[in-house]
Length: 331
Length: 265
Image (cartoon, rainbow over the protein chains, first blue to last red):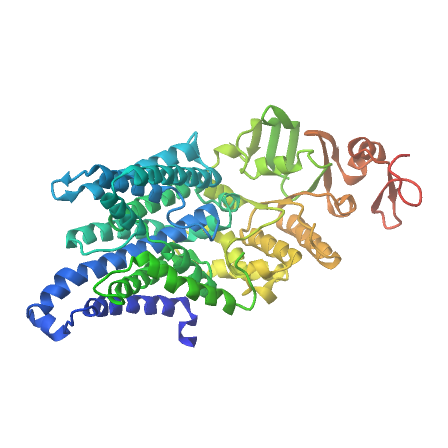
């Protein structure tokens, strides 16, 4: 591990891991796939690789990266290492939208699913609502932001419970399955759009990564050193929420990624956001893609919700990481 | 010397309660000023306004040619540095990373320039913090943290240094060390140093000037001998006070009367 001492080599290693997972994960699954036959375009290997598995792996990569980066941003924003991408209300809104669509059988149109449309609308509504509650006279308070997010999440959760209770059994199962979160084979264009949003958020936040360090210390600390705190907070909240909203509308809520990945990185390489933001994207991507591969293979042909795997793999790993530190610095 | 701050009719209210109401104050370059007064006298509020952190004030607090709240943040941060009383970190930044944050108003891109690292090196050397530069800030003792935070302010290379109780958590040796650093900055560097403090003896020993605040108002302002008079202290702090001049010319302030310092005369 001496090699990974420096942040630069850690970043390079994470990038390599992402590439390795992107190539290796689609080869793994109940039906054997041979890379040479895929390359030659031989059926059915090529179809399985290109249409069933690769889009799903790519989705897991982008979603994992997005959740981990949003975790980093929101944790700095509310200065709490236990904040996750969902804490500011977006997951609640997206879930309520999706559940409404499932319960009332909205079918959508123009090639987009009604569930996805409703989940996106729900995420956007939650974002605007939290923004409206947390800003006063153009100023945003991170404390109110947190409270507003938690409140919106609770209200949405109550509404979901209500809907889940009154809806017929077959739909109630679909609701439950959606709330567990998970990836599925999607169109390449969907992954492409998601990747575009993710890249935009990365560029915007990396550009100000130095200022994020100061914000992670405190609002006054940053303001007294010339950081445009309000603008930074607003950008971080909106960028993070848009990204999480877009991901959640497709995958449903997937826990632990946005919590564990930033934390593990900080424990070993410190809190410098110039490293943390790109590293979280890469590590989160690789982590979720691996978890997703496990989710669809261990009990094949049955699938386990990927959220179960992230928690079961990530949880113990996280505990081990915490215990391995000689000084307990976590709380 | 050049006037840096000009305060006139400055008032701050929270929920209808006036916490600061200063008719007139002026601070010039190279001065070393202590702001003293009981809890709730408005010391932190005054410093916060001067640091540009509390902008909801009424009246006027001008820095240079402009009102403090009208200054663009970055140029202001190159001129004025604020040292908070405590800094609590949630995340594992090292001491050196915290000091590097002081260079933010000079950094345009993502990374620091060599001169930024030189400034950090000097600041950490001055504050005696180089020995633990690589350690997690959260594992440092209270006094070590306070010196790191001061180092961050020094790395900012400001013309004005505003400090909220800079020596509260320090041991005796480092209290004197910090006071010597501050005095050096004001004497040799022409830096205006304004510190809120509860330690009247240190204020008397090191300041050129003492401002006494009571319930938001300035009740005395002048050289330590003029401002720290027994009658002023008794009225402001509500405790009997004696002020003696020692043989080396320094003032010695003692509260209470009798062998155990009973509060009332």
